[in-house]
Structures are given as C-alpha cells and as structure tokens.
Image (cartoon, rainbow, N blue to C red):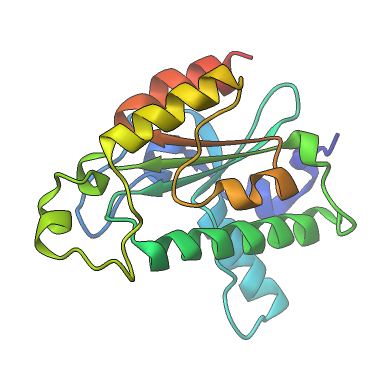
Length: 199
C-alpha cells in the first residue's frame, strides 16, 4: 500500500470534496460533502510546474484515499456529456493514472484492485428530456441516453451483480479499475457513503 503522506505534491494540495466539485461556469457546487481529499487538478498543475512539462496533463477533479488504501478518482461533470466530452473523460483517466504513478514513483503500475473511478454527472442535463437534448440532438456527437435504457441496464447489471456504467466508461473499467461508478449528482452522497466511505 502506498503511503500518500510521503508525497508533498499530494499533501500540499488537500482540499474539501465540496471545493473540488465547484463548477466555475455555472457558479455552483455539485456536492456539499466537506470530506478531505486531494485536489488532483491542483496537484497536476504543481506537477507540470515543477517538472516544466510543455503541456499540462488532463486530470480528474479529486483523489480520495480510503482508510483501507483504496485510491478513488472523482470527476464532477455538471454539463451535457456528448461523445466528445465522454471521450475526454477517458483522456483524463489515462493522464491522471500516469500523473499519480509518476508522483508516487509507482511507474510500473498501481494495482488495479486498489483503483476506483467515480463520475458524478448532472442527470437533468443528460436526460433525453433536457432542453439541450431536445433542441440540438446530433447523432454524431450525442451519447445516447434514455431513462428506459438506463433502467434496463441497471436491472441487468444488478442481476449480474455488477454496476451499470454510463458514457462508454465500461470499456476501460476492466483494464484499470476495480470499480467504476457513474452516479447522478442526487445519487452521489448516498452511494459514495455506502460503497466507498464506510466500506
């Protein structure tokens, strides 16, 4: 298990989960949880500055380490997730994993059974009834989503004793993570406490 307290790039960038969920564009927080986390956006910016990288790697919003050593990346998305933005999530995951590996010196790999990814998204902006979907649907860019599809996926995943994963993230789940969760803003606090915080 990695002792994250040994890495100033991480410890110097501690913050609250609430602050890391702040959406500057809409001037709102996606959670009120004041759980201490690492602001991974800031840690990545520090990493770029120290090592004089020509470009800043993409990064997830927060990094939370559980008492049992689970490494949990958390990304908040308050806007519409079209195919381009869903694909950008994958880049954030790849870059965040590499950045964490370089910061900790675990460049061979951090064990998959220690890694969890959580996407928190705005359900209202990503339902088929949202005004942005109704007014500007483009099958080339939109990630198809519907309450019926989600219910069927959730039921099937439940029967298979797995999680229903949205936005194409299931493609990378088995490669890098023990678990991937895609929770709405409304589901997040309850599910996070039940599946991560108190486990």
